[in-house]
Length: 273
Image (cartoon, rainbow, N blue to C red):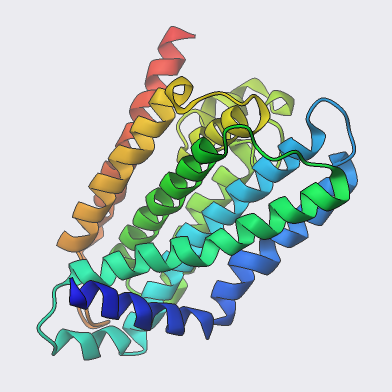
């Protein structure tokens, strides 16, 4: 267990020195918080609760795809991972450290957003605070596992930027994280059913806005949990220490494997709705 704890401490120190980590975990969500709250924060019928839900989802997306994915690619290109390769450790402790670091760094952002919403807009303390905590934790770990797979299948920072954007932007706009799903056209709502972020947003809305228990979010929780398991397993298998270790183009199919729970849910809802 010592390697896991030691690498987590090192990873936290490195992360706090990375400006992009601080931006996507703190400044980026706050920008959306003040924009959204200015538009709908004082509205009735759960206006501020909806704002907090959307901001938390955006933060989790940034934490996972950009915080884990982009940072892992940069560390590989800078030769940081190569230094660990000569030590008697496997990829598992490094990936575990990345998961825990992302989770620990994101929690203060959650408290900051909720505190601002409480004092400025009267957000009540969530009745299902434990359910909210579990949903946030599961979301962070799931999207970081996706981010780490992205980091392994791309060959450069430029390629990772394009790949992450191709996944990040559709989820940002079609999942309900920035635009309420009910305002989207039918084709966009149908497309959103295949995206992980849609189930994250729906789960957060359930526990934050309607005070529903975790048992009411069985499909979302199961899909996120399966993603964590698949993502962690695949990340360990395809982990690359050095930038000279090129990944074959067909290896990108691993991304479809980790997204398979949401693809199945999307097809299920498409044929049963």
